[in-house]
Amino acid sequence: MTQKELFPFFKNNDLVYLDSAATTQKPEIVLKALNNAYINTSNVSRSSYLLASKNQSAINETRNAVANYLSCKDENIIFTQSATDGINFVSLSINLKKDEKILVSYLEHHSNYLPFVTKFKNNLLVCKLDENGDIDLKNFKELLSKNKVKFVSITGFSNCIGRIQPIKEMIRLSHTYGAKILIDATQLIANEKINVKDLDCDFLVFSAHKIYGPFGVGILYSKEPFENNYRTGGGTVSDVKDNIPNFVSSPQVYEAGTLAIPEIISLKSAIEFLNKQDLSYSKKLVSKAKKELLSLGAKIVGEPEAGCICFYFDKIASYDISLLLGNMGVYIRSGTHCCAPLHHYLKIPSTLRISFGVYNDEDDIKKATEKLKQALKVLGYDK
Image 1 (cartoon, rainbow, N blue to C red):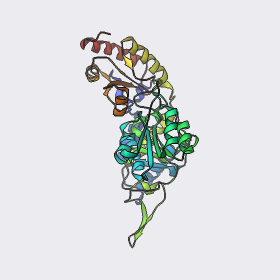
Image 2 (cartoon, rainbow, N blue to C red):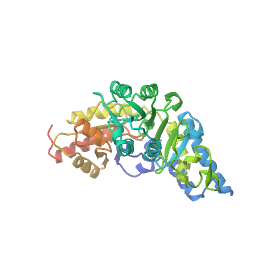
Image 3 (cartoon, rainbow, N blue to C red):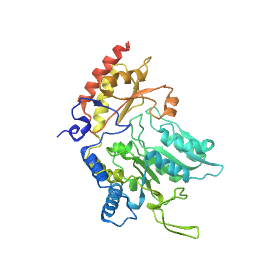
C-alpha cells in the first residue's frame, strides 16, 4: 500500500496537494479514531459511569503518547486549542518590568509574533536573519548580551524558509543570559524528531492538524509550572470554600472547561502514525522541486532544505498563479503565509509556497511543474 492510499482524501481523484504546511491530510486510522470517539461520546473527569471512565482513560493515553514522543513526563503536557492558543497562554502569563525585553525573530509566524507585539510592543526585540534565511546567531547573542531579555520565543522551523533552526544553541544562549525560551515547533515537529529533555527548552508548542491529526487541538509543553495562570474554571479546582479555590495540580489546572475530547483521543493515532514515518522524506522532494522551479525562472526565498519552498516570479502576481493552479488541480498557497514581518524584511510583497506531506512523491512535483508551465504561459510570463 502506498502512502497516498492511507489517506481517504486521495481516493478517486488525481489532485496534487502541496499545502501541508497549512494543514496535513488525515490518514484513515485518525479519521476512524475520531469518528469512533464521536459515536461513543461523553464528558469526562467528573463522571463516574463506564463510558466516561473509558474516555478519560483514552485522554490519559493520548497525553502519555505525546509525552513519550517528546521525551518528557505526562504532567508536562497541556492540551490547548492550537499552537497559537498555547503561545497566547504563555504570553499572557508574562509580566515585564520596564527595562525587561522579549526577543523574537523576523522568521516568526504571526502566531509567534502578534501575542508578544500586541502586549509588549515597546519591549520587543527582533533578531535578524543570515543570508540562508536562518536566525542570525551572532545578532541573537548580541541582543541577549546587551539587553535585559526575560523571554525568548523562536520558531524551530519556518513555514516559509524550509530550514531547521539552531534551536539547541539558542536555548543554551537564552539560559546563559537568564531568559526563558519557547520553541514554536508547529512546522518542526513534522520535519524532525523532538526531544525536549535534550533541548532543555522551557516551553514548546505545536498543533495536531500539522501532524496528520485533527483540528482544534494543540500541545503546550511546559518544563515547570506557570508563574501566572490566567485560565480558571471547571476542572481546575478540587473545591471552593469561603471564596478560596483549592486548585488541582498540573496539567489539569491549566485545562479549564470541557476539552475537545474526540479530537484529543484521535490525536493518539496521529502520534502513532507520525512515529512510524521517516521525517527526512521531504529533503529529496525539496531538492527536486528547487531544480524544477529554478528552470522555470522562479526566485527562491532563502536556501530551503526540507518541508517547504517559498518562491516568486518577477512581475507576476502570486495569487494569479495559485488561482490558476488550483483550477488545474494543483493546490499550493500564495500570499505572505502569516509571515508579513519576514516578507517586509526581505522586501518581497508576496510569495508562492509548496509544502510537502508524507503522501507526496516526485510524481507530484512532475505534475505540478507541468501545470505551472501552463499557468505561466497563460499569464504571459517569459523568463
